[in-house]
Image (cartoon, rainbow, N blue to C red; front, top):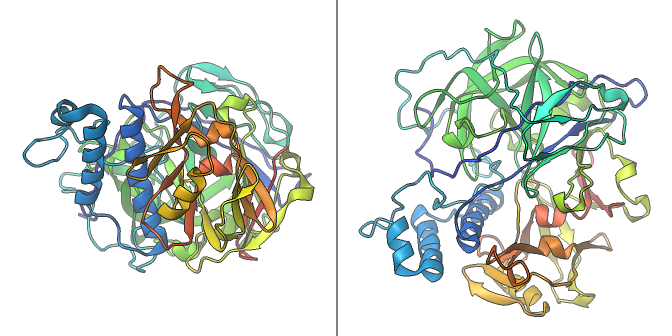
Length: 523
């Protein structure tokens, strides 16, 4: 037993396929770009209830980032209970909850505490300094078996993905029908980003082991551990860890178990397992005997058959690492495979029909942004997250009076979460905005309001389509929408958690060596 019992989460109902294997580039040494896949969170819950689940998850993630007390299970249940009561009344409450205990009858269904838009999270011990081997997430690990998944095929049917061009090489693969295929990449050592659903999770394919296997990896700027499933992996729900790729001595001759253990608890979900070394290739750059983790135990957030990815790559600073090892970008820089320990993100938006998202290792892809708008600010976070001073927040050019704020920039968070007074101040400047309680605001779906966050003297506007996050009534797309800016008493009076609602509107780059964050306007 390695973990404490976790809150369960709704499953992702989708499938994704591996991307073409990249080849090294001789023309752009020091710069590597990988594809990302965007994931869709599907839910039959009312949008306001689903939104509350997402807010609950953000509260826990932000609390871990800032070292504050996490909201208790009871507090999160009460938030959700109030939301269900307000939306569906007593009848809905009785359908979803045990009327005596207040606990959902079906914890694996959509009524769960946390909406798993992006399931990657923050190590539970990031601030406390606790390391691996202290506790257990699974109720029991008795009877664990070697399931021998190492050579399992991860290809899942659908439409053919266009072959990549340039130095990434090309090969024919397939994608599910719901995946929007990416355009040909615009940079060397790059692959296109395929989109699943509405701007949710972001995946890239790396190769691990001897012979190399493709692993589809979820990329997260808000954690610092890299892991994939083990050939001995067992789910907290019982049984194996689903239809994924797995790593171990059966599938890789270069695999070495160090005999050390690790565990990571995320905003939703957790894993535990062994620290190992093996060969890892990122866009053709070979990290020999890289140190990372294989998960022998996973909660169903990661182990379920409908979970499309095989592991997670944390790209915050390694001071956060539960495995106490370098992140892949730090290892690439240390071995001289890239010039700088820089990771850059271009997160695309489905509605634009551009499908040009990328994650770039070792530098910035200047074809993705206006170089005249590039600003670089110091990372003010002392613990390894990426946080910058935010100069101002404006609505249609009108200053909200919110100076002296900081923003944690996190690809693993969907929404923007601001302190309550700040969120209220912003929405007071948006015509038609309403506070509907529990950290949620609504705005007209047809709003043209331009909310902008300023960093380093440059203002970055949020597209109104991102601000109008989701219709309250799916049958009325011109009515009221849930705002992409929520409120929560989960940090200091000046700290914001800024996720993909904003990051889709800027080129985002982090530099470990200089301890800086850069933003630029997209082209």
